[in-house]
Image (cartoon, rainbow, N blue to C red; front, side):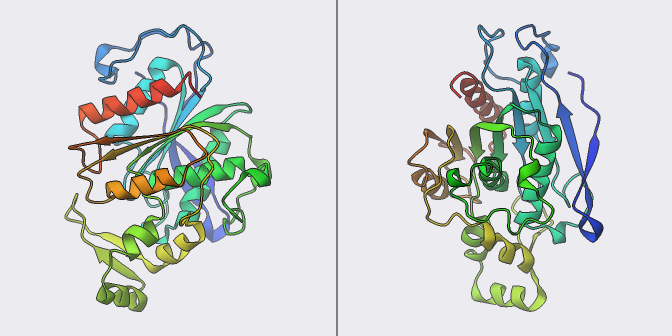
Length: 311
C-alpha cells in the first residue's frame, strides 16, 4: 500500500491561523477493479475480496481522540481497508496534535470542529457520501460535524446555532458531501462537562479556576493530560445534553465494557438519545478504551464493511 504524501491546510486567519496536517487517499475511479495490496499491507480482517455491486459510500473520514494522532492503529487499519475497497480515506491531526501546528493548550472543541469541517470541505467532491468514524473525542466531533454538514437545511438540524461560535467556518461554502453513516468508538460526547468537569473534585476545580488549567493523570502515559478552563468553557457551546439527536443516518457504537475513560453507560446514554435513527451498540466484554487489539480492529473494519451497502 502506497502512503499518500503528508499535506497541510491552513485553517483560520491572522493569529488564529494554523497548519493542519492530513493524509488523503482519493477513491479509485472504479472500485470494482481493485488491485489487491501485498498481504502484509492488508488489515487482518475477514472481508470479501470482491464487491458484487458498487457501494453507496464513496469514502471514509477518521476523527481521532483527545491527545491522539492520525498514525494510530485504528486509523492505519481504516487506511488499508479503504485502499482495498477503493474508497477515499481522510485522516488528519487536530491543531496541537501529531504533525499539525498550533499549541495544544489553545485547543477547544470549536477549534477542532472548525478544522475537521475545513479538511472535509477541502478534500470532498460534490455528491460524496462519507462514513464518519470517530474514536473517543472524535466520536463527539463526528456527531457535531454531521450537524455542520446537515446545516444546509436548518430545519433538519437538532444542533442549534452551530455556526455562531466557530470563527471562519462558512457553512454556505461547504461542497455538500453527505454523511452515509457514523461509526463511533467509545464516543466521548459532552466529555468536557460529563467526563472532565464532572470527574474533578472541588480542589481540582478551584485549581482550574485559579490557574486556568489542571493536570489530569493519564493512564496511558507518564505525561498528564492538561485540561484547560478554555476547553471546558468552550465545550458548553457544543453540549448535546439530554436532547434528542437526529443524525439522519445509521449509527454504530463500539464500546468496551472495561473502558475506564468513557464508561459503557455513557455510550448507552448516547444510544438512548438517537430514537429516530438506526442504531446498533456493540459492547466488547473485555474491551478497554482504545479497542485497538487485532480482534477490535477486525470488528471495526467489519462494521464499516457492513455499512457500505446498507447506507
